[in-house]
Image 1 (cartoon, helix red, strand yellow):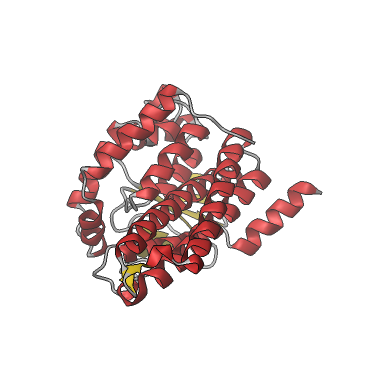
Image 2: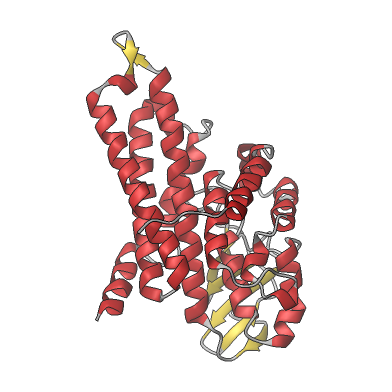
Length: 320
């Protein structure tokens, strides 16, 4: 299946790339990792002004309507630049909050504009860990009684990706929905993860290709070695195969197709991260080198909102 973007979609992606290129995202990521959110919130506002978060919000609440293809396109670009913050969780929260008119009026305009950050966690048996709960304005906890608006966050727990700050949310607070649309939120979240992972994988490949062209051994660029070419070709093929799966899932939005997209994109990004780490050599292990910001994100996204095994099971169930 071949997907061709129209002129409006290509211009949208190009405008996001220009915005993010000018933002110096590595510096923003490092500040966010230290719990300093000023530059990250400013970037978040510019992304919101560009219309990204409105793609998960109905028009009557200040959004552009639920436009999955355009949202996937945007998340690819945000992943390409490793933008920090609860991107996926804000999308999931928008879906959960949009099921009731009173909640939608209360929260969705802020989400659409980029003024409001939201995060979501499952807190069935005590505390649940939410991504960036310390920075979020809206903290949702899915409990056995329903969806609750958590009053606050506890101490931050570090994760594999320093920019993914995990904070515990107690299963208490205002009960805002007894039967939240969790299945729909999970589908949208997995699509967002898949698109973000695809962007991360593409960025890692681009950085690695540029590096092996300039790094030399035995008087020639490392990229001229056949083994290196084969390794990078495998990564390129995996990413290019994942791309139509992601956008195809954005068209159908069935749980099985979206699970397949997440599985395909996250595995391709993980393959890209392993190749990048190996071909960069010792410098790839250092936290001071910008490559690490993408390496850790690729690994973290692989298990976010569903492990590979869980996604495979969803795909199989959808084929029965």
